[in-house]
Length: 136
Image (cartoon, rainbow, N blue to C red; front, side, top):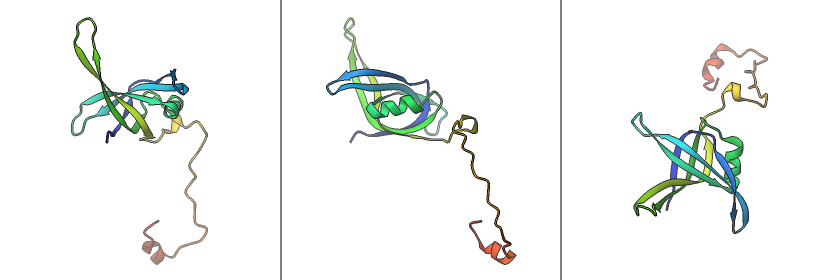
């Protein structure tokens, strides 16, 4: 099994391109995700790649600074330098699933949605019953 789960913030806006595959054209989105290390104030950056519908979601909804949680496949590729003959390694995550990890702030809400006001009960509740109601 090759699954990794990460939570972090986008370091910059995603870059989305069209690429040719055996099945035709498909979208590919790439972005760096800054992930905070446990129990320390240090962080590291992981390159994330999304294909197809995931790339369309990334292009439409994600931008620099948004906090997300994602799962995907860890891929480590070896790249050999033709001139020097030295090998280096490139690590990335191929995204399978993504979720927002925090709510939008009020200034970012663009659909005009306002939370409903707390309803007032149109009748009086006796004091002894009021104390017995743990959900109020």
